Image (tube, rainbow, N blue to C red; front, side, top):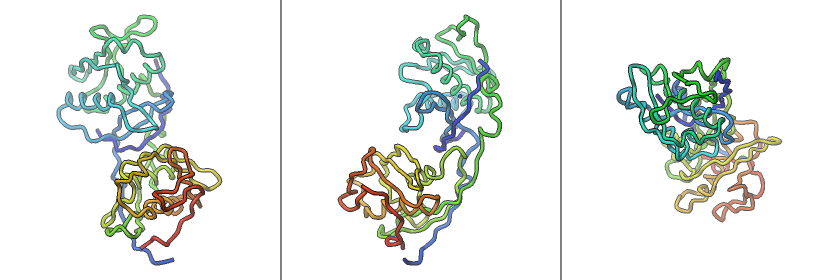
Length: 306
């Protein structure tokens, strides 16, 4: 089962969430998997789906690895792990294609909405593993029951999702024009990519995520690797990109113009935005690395293009 940070919202209906440019061309259409893990959105009201790294080993080993992923805090402002701190998986035992998961007593302290989202996320994630057809929850040795004391019993996708239709796995391909630093780190190189993405992700966010996590052959990434995206929004054709202070990492050596205009040029070339306002922790009264004034929206420029 695989996950590479493509987020989609899941509607949950429960039965019980100036110069010539050098061009590099790459295609990322095969960069997406049809298997996912389910997480909880930042508001704690719905599920989001994320691709994960390939699980390996026996069915039992894949189950254990998936549960570990679901219990590990994620570094994202957009979603969180479904198994919170304090709630622990005491055992996960596969009997044929039936999986018994035992949680500690802290499971019983979860509010009803949070419990339902946890249950949904865990079951929907695990039944994608080949060899797992149904899942039942236990608290210690006692089977999980509903508010009337009735045993919940074995669960699969039919217990949680109905009429989701094509929205669950709706993808489209976007042709992006991205700017990375050349090998010498003194100019920007235009790169075109066809990226398959979920339709619930904005093109603007897709561009920013691509710049932070990818590069192209013969190029280097001009973005500080410790940068985290806090938000991306658009108003009046201006793209507002709010980054954390990892963007100002002094240990990252790169011409500040390449870092900033990689972002500005890529967004204006790949979207309908004409300008980009970069903020750091919500603040725009910043001179980036003592070089570039970020107090006003920036327009694209070919001055740094190769």
